[in-house]
Image (cartoon, rainbow, N blue to C red; front, side, top):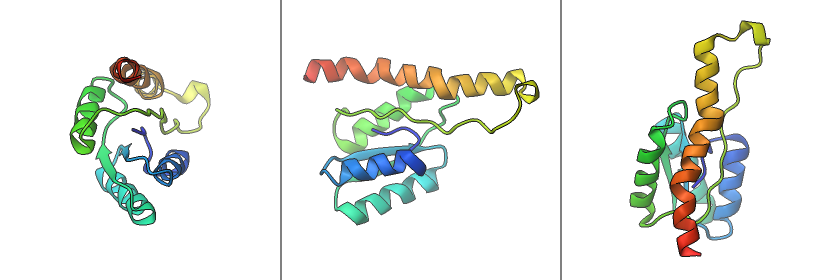
Length: 126
């Protein structure tokens, strides 16, 4: 499972894993981009690739993303790649409190939540 992998380094990571015959689930904030990324990976590698939309700005969305991943790939993930889109480049004095909270959720709290959801199962499966 790769978070925020419809483009950039996340996509490159998903593609590299798929080239090693790893089934991948790529998430992105836009369902069309996530589906397109998965299609491109599957076309390139012949490996199962699924694209799912998920909003990292709300950590509670991680539960649904994990459930959708388990359903799509017929099992829990054994690899988790944490990634996120970065905030827009601006001066600190220009960032509002609401924007800061959203970026903290996206860049930290959602990622921590996904680790909490996925890692215990990984440990159990060895």
